[in-house]
Image (cartoon, rainbow, N blue to C red; front, side):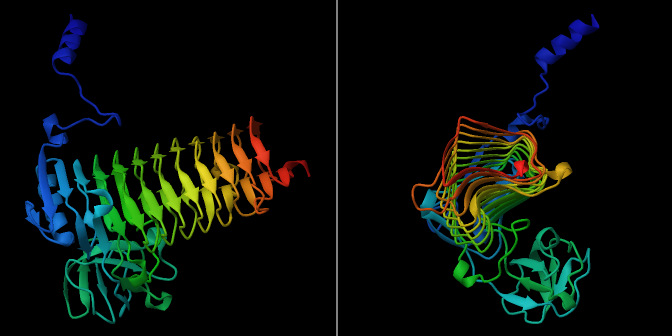
Length: 421
């Protein structure tokens, strides 16, 4: 009888869960887009031309539990990130809706910034004001240890921040603050979407290059089950699209070009990402960078061309990933690198199949480090006569088993297996 009652209860009151296995709210309607608010330069629910108008719409929809913010055509000046909210879709009109980063202001700190302190004191306060985004770091404390925050209050040259400092930012280490921030960002959220938007990083007026661990044209931190689709990021002085410690993220049909850092950067413990049908071209570093502990991911159908680093790099604990049907052409350091990690931290069990790797500098594929379980199958790895991709596949001395199957390799040295030396 108890079993029958349980079955009936489950039939009448099903335990809803989404694809990520998370329980929905008691009122499941809250998780569904229900309200649409428009933002534009004119003839919209909210009229404005900067981040404040956009943020007002996103916060309004977020407080209702979810919905859609439609941003009309035009250029919107960003003095801080557009901060995403859970279950809110932000949608534009493609290249016609441009979120342009404001010019950068930068100052050395006037006193040390302490770990856990939510304030800074700067030498030159010009350009620092309430509501502006700010990046705080030093020569030795950047990357994961720098922060991006919003200035909440201030007087003269002392400003309080929306986030605590994540390290000691010392004068002796060149501690500084700069009005640098992701143009679009989301922290500690889920089920947000960004669609059909263009980000202009205004690189010429933003000289500080910031690490993709905390900034990018579009950036997520602990943003689960989020979607970024048909977005353009150009000329950002850092990474194009980066997400850190964010699970089940989908990036589809996006373009990252002429950015100073990586084009596409799934990072630091992001599980099961899908990056599909994107373009990363003419960026300063790798086109596609698997950061640390990215597992169970899929990189499919992407074009990685003309980047200043490798076309793709994979390394620290980046195991169980699938790389398929990508085109990797003309990158300055080489096609694809398995980074030189030791056995406990190498990229094990990576399947690389049905890709085209062409005319990259020096080599097509380099399986370095103490990797094992690598599958390289049905790829075209070729130099078309330019004489620059001289090595087709290079296998490092420490590599474990590598399955080479069904590949077409055209190079002066098709296979350099250093394990046999």
